[in-house]
Length: 463
Image (cartoon, rainbow, N blue to C red):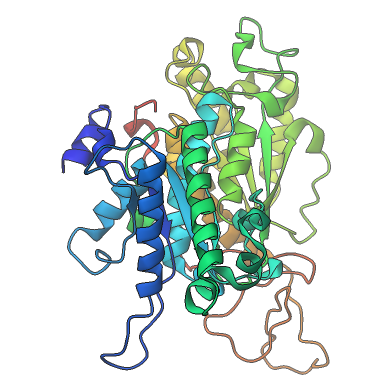
């Protein structure tokens, strides 16, 4: 409770209760009652890493060198303790294995930590990469989800045998004790170097049980899905009379509604947030894309439209948005950022909100049904990170409903056509996979597109 109250009240958490690193791993089931615990080798690795980190740093006696969640997953308060550790640790260390990327729980841990790094990067406009992966069991590149595949990390510096056998092989096989010690020591040095370089700040803990998985819903080997982010905003060169240029850049993609608290344009923050959900993401300007939509064609991907309310002050843009709203494109969902500390926006809030409702009545109604905060006004960057997974899920659900149906190859007399995914499904799936064209990665579908999370202006903190 002390840790939660410190973060909630805006205080700094004492270093003695911040774990230096978080070891994330997939539990291995026991074979037979009373048999040896297969995770005892992970515990040994954890103890060795903690010993090296204590030797390599000036952490005081009693400080938590590391954190692993083995003891608390089935205990009381495990979610709160896990969330607090992910919110305060300095480095995240995932143990790569095929089982790891098939684990929803491991994907949640990754997502929660990466979300924190994205948020800090948005505030500073500096990279805040503090994930140091370790090979427990070597994983083919084709089985890595997008967030893991994008990590820039050279495992070869830990030794040749480490790359071919992983830490599990080194710790289990006779004759490799020296190689194991070298790999663990090099890993500990990398953890310390990243912690000292990045300096990731603690944040308020997320509710671990409610966060999505960074690996997507399908588990190990799932190809990344695609999503497009479009920004409807002006540039600093064509602003309405009297509008301050400090929130804008040379193009719509440089619009930064949360200036000066945030330094990174919202298009690129949204791109990072969506990638953290295992999507391949593209971004574009509504000015460049308007007129290229064809509502008669089936969709190829879900889309998010990020709208600056000030665009309704430009009659040409307002008319293009109104025309877009009349097209039947329910797989495009709207997000409306709204900085209450922008005095010009605050002064015209009612007028601009009314005009946007009149311009986009269909999209605003659809967006409000999926996530009220997204349409009513997203108050800050932290809230954007909280609501965007819900908006992405709603857009993906609509995409699944309207995507083109493909008949199974060689079977044109099926009574009820099945929907084929990019891998070409065979047999009755449970649950059914998503209906994507052969060249389009599969979508996110958990059967729930009606959650209504109204965080918007209710969360007025600037992190």
